[in-house]
Length: 102
Image 1 (cartoon, rainbow, N blue to C red):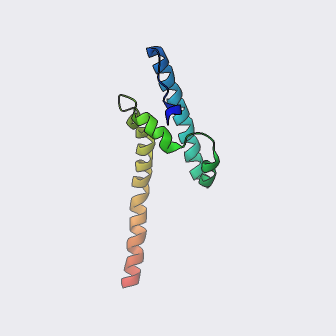
Image 2: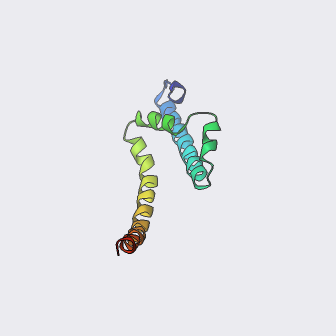
Image 3: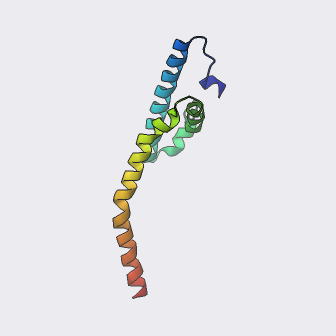
């Protein structure tokens, strides 16, 4: 993990390194989401460089809840999708239960 978090010599370098790490994380997150959506998640293991957990660990060490801010939008989007599909799924399951018991 040290390769993701070099020791800065100046404050400006710290900002540049943080920005670079955030850009890399966003690109990898986009790649990971796309891979899962297209059924190619297994290929992520062959991508050279840090994986999602490595990026998350590095971002978790940054100040100001950087990791939480970066994950807030994707997690919120997932929760919204789940809440949209939950009622129809529950209705289908209830209908199946009723036909099995009736």
